[in-house]
Image (cartoon, rainbow, N blue to C red; front, side, top):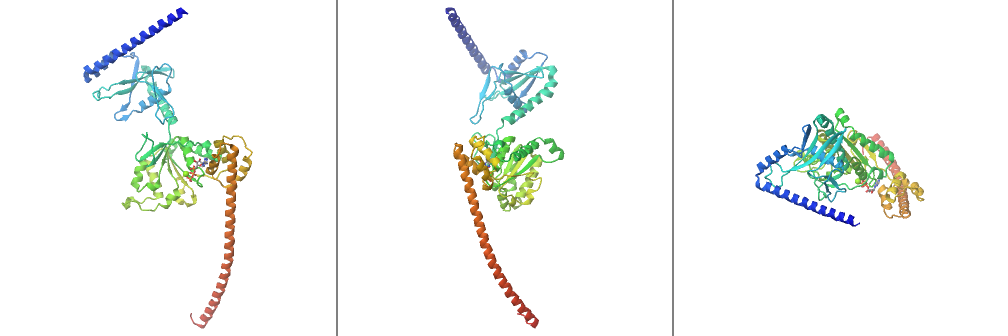
Length: 498
Ligand SMILES: Nc1ncnc2c1ncn2[C@@H]1O[C@H](COP(=O)(O)OP(=O)(O)OP(=O)(O)O)[C@@H](O)[C@H]1O
Ligand SMILES: [Mg+2]
């Protein structure tokens, strides 16, 4: 026991002295470094660093090193961005130092390798070493804080073709995948609220994270209709070559129509979450000229959904005169659509445009022609299937409940929207109370409708009565006119004109 504690204290001593040696070494290095920086002029400093690097080259003669700089002139180097993201996915226990970060809005920590660290990746049985290097920039080292970050990719020279032809393209592909997995869908609006850390602002569009958590499985819709939509979206995003081959702009138009509260906006959010596309909400009433529109639309990005809500209301204002320059100021809805077609054919890829309306019948038929809105989706009142989805979402009710039968029987005649049902379901966590609320709602709705129907039939009765009276009056008048006409005739016959 005593031996063990002596051993431990010796070990602690050794540990302490090791630590102090390490600390003094680090201190010395820092001193040398600051002397080096203070005493040696910057031009000479770069030269000495290079010479040292040459003398103590860490690669053997049969190894090749590729340098991946952070920037190409003023542009970001895409390979560098890809490397940063890719290396995060292959961090292994051999790495000693990692960086961890998270902004206030990010949900997960970002763990990446620290400068000076290296990671060995294995691809097709070949070891490829990545080093993350940081050094003061040779050229700009007089500027305080200027620094250069780059990656070194080190491998055997004989694998050069494999690395350039297959490994790096693989890294780039993985980067695209990682980007789409990590992508936060954003909602862009003009002049609306924006996030404090909105570094995604584009032109006049400010953006917020789309916090709408709705997904297709949460939507109260017919499962076949949902499948039709997701299949259509999948087909659309996978058909880049097809659109190129037939010479069509890679875009798709959806028209969502149905009463308020049936889930049109929710469906758009579900589409955006499904595809990880950003949403641009185009408020037509805030656009005053074609040039406005051009500027606004050119600052939207690919892989996005442009929405124009309540298209029938927009149609009403379509002929207003806007601005002062008349040649450029008349903005019509069909003009807007032609304009979008033209603009996107020159610069847009993977764009979806969604129009919503509560009154499909009010829309100009020219806007409904195929090619303009490829898919028409009717958002209907709540169905028994829709109700079950909502009950699962809101009350976590997967099995049947004794009140389900009655609700399902009444739900179609009651003509309630999913929004109204959802509101009732949110009133209590107790299924019995919440479902009772839904039943009350359905009964209320049915009674209201019956009242309306009775009123309508009363109106019809009144109309019928008045119709009868009108008929009587008309018959009398006709008889009188006939009489007059006869008289006229008579008079005509007598040659006298009244
Ligand atoms: N089909 C649905 N599935 C699930 N929830 C729905 C559905 N429809 C409506 N809701 C609920 O009702 C709320 C309002 O619906 P939403 O805004 O999507 O309707 P809308 O059709 O866009 O209405 P409006 O025509 O007034 O714009 C949603 O936030 C959601 O909670
Ligand atoms: Mg809406």
